[in-house]
Image 1 (cartoon, chains in turn orange, blue):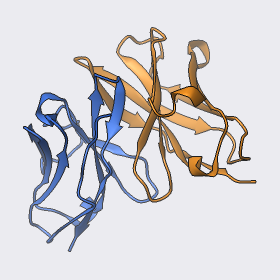
Image 2 (cartoon, chains in turn brown, red; image 1 turned 180 degrees about the horizontal axis):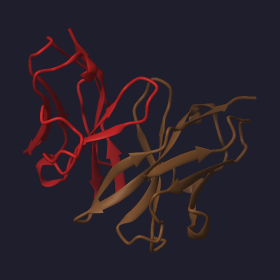
Image 3 (tube, chains in turn purple, brown; image 1 turned 135 degrees about the vertical axis):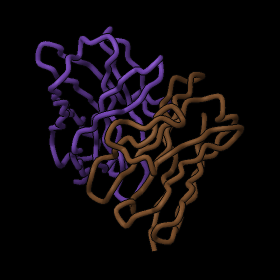
Image 4 (cartoon, chains in turn cyan, yellow; image 1 turned 120 degrees about the vertical axis):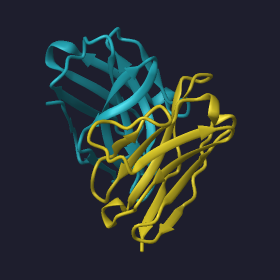
Length: 122
Length: 108
């Protein structure tokens, strides 16, 4: 059974750095076809892709947020970590991690975590 | 950057067919995926690579993609189909994953 679970602070102050952890089970982060993305959704708004990482440690970041994001993984712990610097109230959102299944070279999100709401406020 | 355009809302009568569009420049050359999101829940994949259904998704859900428009079709719409629907592609030119703005489906 594949599961993903996000964890991290529910409240951060403006200018602080956010660190979120996605703990996965039911698959290995070393599986060649698999990867993990971080995706966020501000209240009442659309989904926004942030970053992803693959088993070979290949990483990719949203062009618009690249300077603020870092993604990494610890395969032995089955964890993917996202850091976002210089948080602002507009970054208030539910943050999801999702499994990537590369089907014929195409990125598809077949399993999602439940999401974690992060509020940015002083 | 690549953009995907969806209507904000679509309404359909119970038992009828709903069509949700996703517009993008030459989107027919890309692989389009669709996700269903009910209030308070994480998105669920309902169509991948334009027209393929994951296991467990009813046959009532289908998809197509050509030219500048991809379409998610929901036949015999049910009250349980009420949700937000998002299309998604991978923009190879920027390596960005792109989501549409989402469409709220209402079943009347």
